[in-house]
Length: 332
Image 1: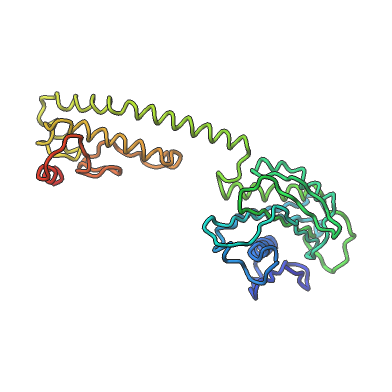
Image 2 (image 1 turned 30 degrees about the horizontal axis):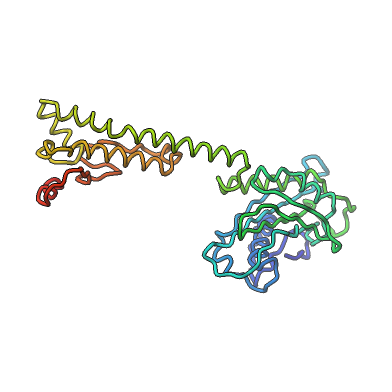
């Protein structure tokens, strides 16, 4: 990324790619960071497709903070980008990933050394709220801001970029040099983390949220197991009610709802096994993703015409063996 002659945009220097003039500064910064990560922090000339076969391996969050009360043409802006890159398990790459990352810092569209005070404001963010943790941070002898991450997942790297500039700059050097507002830097980075968390729900959780999720999952498993334990008794009860009825029309309707022939009602265990399989199938289907299932139409245990979204007509099995002819008849 380099400064343009008019200093009003960030230009993406990426293998001859030309971006539309309408591309915003933060979009250019984000695309530039993608390119930076693909090239292993610009250590190679081309993107490493062995490590990152597609852009889905990069998770990106962006944030923009600015002064609300200042001179109309002198609003200070701070843009932040965070990239979490993960090399797939199946990758054959032998590239090394470092838990120590340099914070890319720009002022008014020019790469600069990051002031220690601004790095300190980043360190004061509660990173654990987003499933991350800083082990150490410093500005080295070259003026580079360096962060060492703690307890990263295997084959994962986290990269940060900050850009501080004024909303409108008529001429280079017309602004008096002053340190960017530390609260703006902190807020911009927090906004990028919030954006990351919102884009990828369930991935960047605090330790408390992870513990709560695990606890909730365990409770759900126990609850489902308790339900399954009572399924045989429930199926026998429903089957008993059907088989004990003397109403021929009622029993015929029940057979159609179960997807079996009325003549099969008298076969030992047939109705019980069919009902039990339907109940278990529905429990398992809703257990796959209970939140998603809650927003959709619930599966029906019995559906007019014999079919439902879980077990199609004639798919019910029962414990007693029967010959192929009766099986074929029950599916007609």
